[in-house]
Image (cartoon, rainbow, N blue to C red; front, top):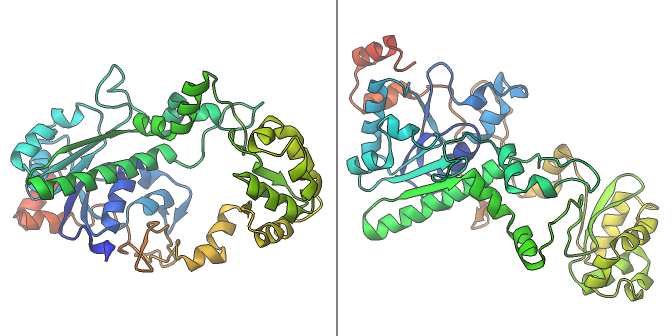
Length: 397
């Protein structure tokens, strides 16, 4: 099964916050052994991102760190970096999200670690990339949403720009990093040699703007904020109902005819203003008004039932609670239980991949801070006395 795809692969995870931990959680779901390196007494920044919390633990941390082991090392101390280099000798992947130059300053750069272990896949995540004048600047998801243009096209036309609430830059960077690591491991299987993988929040942000960039390069016109609508198709947005909203997506003329039939206004499909998609885009405001004259007389549930009966793509507007408890989401087992010590009610969002009809992904709860420090050090040959000495020096918890 796919959850065993990376069985036997050891990953050293020096990341925190969202992008890196999301990447290594994906690797762990596919069966890799992930060793999460955290600061003694503090841990990943997300451990302190609360409220909200579950059982006294940050829900953000819990959502991004299943299938991992935790070791506490103070990487500002030489003995900690020596321990990390020992771990790297037996690792298949090491991933960090330090600012460019920080890992090298600690003796943990790609050249040094790949000299120790030529089969190592070394992944570095940065904010603005490894080169250029901004390379060493810190960055977070909303900063890059602003910088990359994502924020400029998000929101309603006459309102101030807003960020996309989902951390799509961070989580997207985690996905790209995981794909880069998978590709590097496949290359290593052929060549026997590791390689370096670099990703950044900025590159992810620009990549998410692919369609907008293409439109700008083709027309020379800047894209604008359009709320829930899309510039290239209509109707393709939220419409008001008597008790909420329904999204109607007619991506071609045939689907528009189905929408009109379902809403009981087939004459709209023959209206010269709306015959083709280009016509509808050019007369978007009139089209929206005509459709909402119908939709506001019905509940969202009634509209969805009628539209789906004709094969017209649509959706009710759900909040988070409605979405995760919907019978379809439950059927897909997308938010399964994952009981953790002290949190028997814990549920997390699963890896969105199925194979052989079953949900992919191992199910080991997120580790408590430093839970595996002693065990991992013992594996490296540090006996109880040596560990106590390191603990007294503040090298470990």
